[in-house]
Amino acid sequence: MTRTLSPETIATVKATGPALQQHGVAITTAMYARLFQNEAVKDMFDAAAQESGEQPRRLAAAILGYAQNIDKLQNLTGAVGRMVARHVETGVKAEHYPLVAEALLPAIREVLGEEVATDAVLAAWGDAYWFLADLLIAAEQARYDELEAGEVAA
Image 1 (cartoon, rainbow, N blue to C red):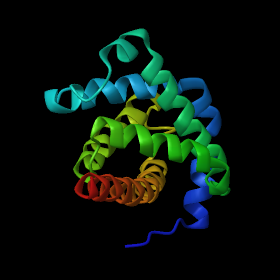
Image 2 (cartoon, rainbow, N blue to C red):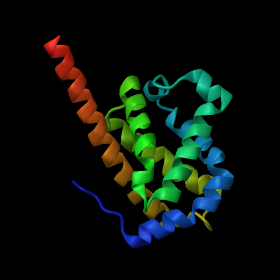
Image 3 (cartoon, one colour):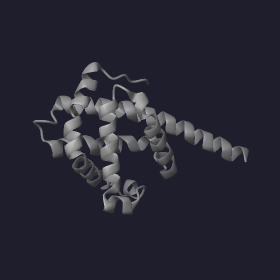
């Protein structure tokens, strides 16, 4: 299924840029706290990067970059390529994406509060999340398929 982003979703996500810039690390830290209640998922991550705060900072920067470039996705080609490579390296699969969504969206509301993170804002971020997730899932599956084909030919 090919998703598209409505002009309203794009405008809403872009409008959250200042809040993400100010509170992004708090959001990603809260997200990881929720996500890591699942030990199997937690084990997929570099504990040192979590403890140092590097991973929450990287993800916060990536989310902010996405919000700022949601209407210019070509600006994110390099970042998406690095993300796909890292996800394949660590074994991320399509079934992990709902877990992240279930952790990220409530974390946005928790940190920003209901006045900023309204239902409309969370709906827009949900659409934006799944739009990007679909792109990543397809690219990651293509890479897994390439790797499998290479192993079979070896």
